[in-house]
Image: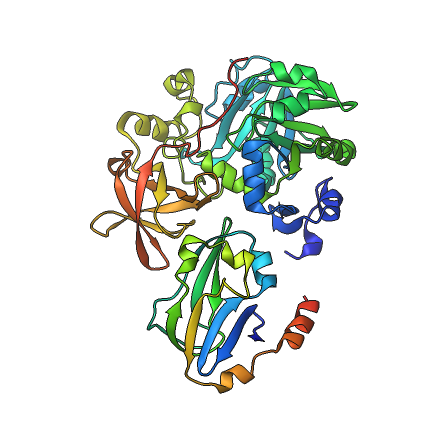
Length: 121
Length: 369
């Protein structure tokens, strides 16, 4: 797993990256009540809004940690958005993106670096 | 504004010690949520009793030769007819009938009026009062008092254990009661739609009383996040969002706060506009909407069936009680019929919405004992 400073994670299998938000981000958001996942086929550039998570209070963008094409969207979240809080780094994933530039992954933090980053917040 | 510039309520240390998440709000560092989180805090208040720190709000005494008559010069409320022991909702109006702030004013005793105004507006409110009626009344800001709200179906039983007489109060009663060893100004009112009380206390005693109330297992501390979702379900407008200096009481759906006597007399700021809107209808009116899909939040556009933008959402979010998104917004009266089908535009997407009656969740004010 790799991490961004915006608290997204990706898990890469071949050229497919699964994207979600970290437990820290899910805790900061509070109870997630709605998730908007991207349409399959959508092309995103690194830093684009990939999904939107809404708590009771506010809507927050989830940014694409890498560029590519959305090949799968987690439709389970429409009926059970609370999964983002319960299992942010497992069932609460948002989308799978086919990487267009695998080198982008290398620029992301590993878990030790991300945890060190959390310590500075 | 940096964190160091933020003001603190007398309960700041208690919030931080209890692990609340603090955010800047109305110039104060305030708890947006306590440990339970917004959703659980919201539902707890609807089922039990929630305790809120609302000490950021402005509290003042208006004293003078005829404070009630003076107050009528700047509001459309019937305050000369306000009996001792009662409180009334009203608003400060500008000369064009726009709302400067909404407020509660009470006669808890014989000591003029006790006024509670919004925290973000209080400095402007006092300056306005000073310039308009300062020659007739003395405005004494009660900076040394805290304000708590205890809200929910178990609030009355909780508070009556400390002060039995509160059980005999009805909605919008206001009185001075000795409780917790201090002189408290208590009203049976609040901003959640639930039965409950607002309690003004000496600041020095606030933390002790806050902790005493929390010792009751029916009571949990509730942050501003749940306060906002509760008041939205109650269909109550929030100043700075649903109401502002361009909004009239008629547009805001606040006709109940315009007494018959004052409407006829037309002796309040902006009366010409307000009387015209009462007679002919306003050009826009506040409505409640049930929203399909993503929550439609403040600023989202409202469109008709043909895609024409006809209004805007001023408050919106997910209703924890109902389990779907709700919103308040303004539309032309012709589109404001309950059941009318409209659309809202959220992040560029068109979603179905329907006009529904407010409150979204029935209120449970105790009007008779």
